[in-house]
Length: 261
Ligand SMILES: Nc1ncnc2c1ncn2[C@@H]1O[C@H](COP(=O)(O)OP(=O)(O)OP(=O)(O)O)[C@@H](O)[C@H]1O
Ligand SMILES: [Mg+2]
Image (cartoon, rainbow, N blue to C red; front, side):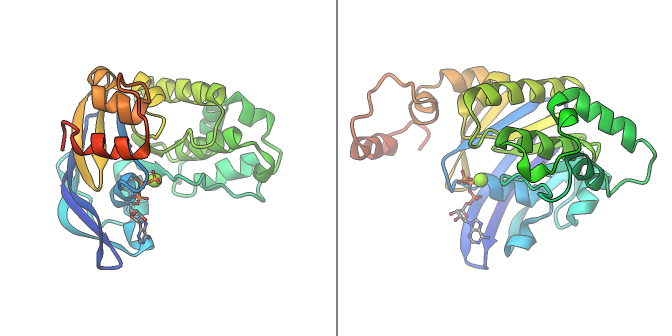
């Protein structure tokens, strides 16, 4: 189990972004984290992945534990190799000038075993389109294909826990549906998934539980079904609440009287 305990994170010593977040991720589940732009979702994943210092951020309070061991302050490669936690960043980090297959090979940098080839075949099993494109430069792939490659690269690290930061960003609904179905299959194969998403509906549809983050705090949590049925989540994250939102001013006023505040 991954547990985040009262985490406080600041950037540049002064910009306070996470203000005491606590949450846990159970082995084998899909845990969904939703929240508006700037709520701190990416900061949370960067902190868990051991990458917060690359962004001039500091964990000033709290702890991050994997099965009881503190992983706070370990470097990113250690967290990946020793604890099996792999983070797929928001901006789909792939090598544009390498081929799709070379990208998959490069992602296996942290491994010494001889199973790289068979694991590549496994990735092609999940993402047949990557096999079709394996000899092509990754930079020519579409947004959806690049996202699949980014996840494929993460799979080459043999993750136990996969943290995905807005995988549906900029993708057409049909591609998102395809991608989320593959995420569901990866989870069914035993990989724990932490899914940060603005596309709350698609995420909660495949998720087991979820948390809502606002300004660096958890304001609500529950099973995916509970969150999908919650009036405020429907209003603000699913766009399907009962109340018609008439103007931004109304929305702000409504926001002030949300139950979780
Ligand atoms: N390196 C940084 N230095 C300073 N401030 C930062 C840095 N990275 C993020 N922030 C700020 O921290 C806040 C939270 O950012 P973060 O990227 O974690 O939010 P988010 O919930 O992932 O948002 P989004 O949905 O837009 O991806 C924002 O106000 C952002 O401007
Ligand atoms: Mg983000």
